[in-house]
Length: 242
Ligand SMILES: *Cc1c(COP(=O)(O)O)cnc(C)c1O
Image (tube, rainbow, N blue to C red; front, side, top):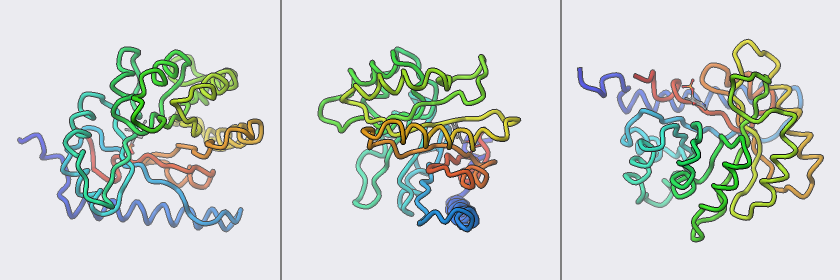
């Protein structure tokens, strides 16, 4: 078997993508009946880890802008391969994998967003290493909403301290929160939304605070119901990963 055999063909890929967008619209419309949010500005992050650059190019051509990657070496190869884009097909790259201290320079040099910042030491390195000719790096704090020792992410109790640190970094733009909740934890979305709104109220000077990244292929609708602003969808668009 060739390695690409698990990848869907381009028509299936486009169909999947359109279906996911449709599901987002429907989930949003159902949610907005209750709290009259308007209009639907939920961002779809297409999670392309392990998938080839060709598939990313096909979706970029359809108008998909935001792509998420977890594995640095693989990501840099794709980012480099897809560098020259036609007008209107630009790609915004999000790093959503765990961050090792010695990898911060590569992340700061190649990505537009980092969603997995959980410690000041990492934030400071990203700030110091962000190239001067690029705009500030957009940052989300990954929150350990389940308060589990084994999980990555900043504990809710440590959030104010981390926000305060990142606010002071000129080469970073703090945009909000990201979570990967434990499956069993059913009210994680609602609690994260509440925390997100509390930060917004507590730090009025933080006008870049506008993004709540929660919801994946399996729980997208539930996240939208709870006020997410960005869903991260891999499998439902690209098919199973090898
Ligand atoms: C892989 C991954 C996703 C996408 O997961 P699917 O279940 O394939 O939609 C979303 N977020 C993060 C952080 C991931 O690592």
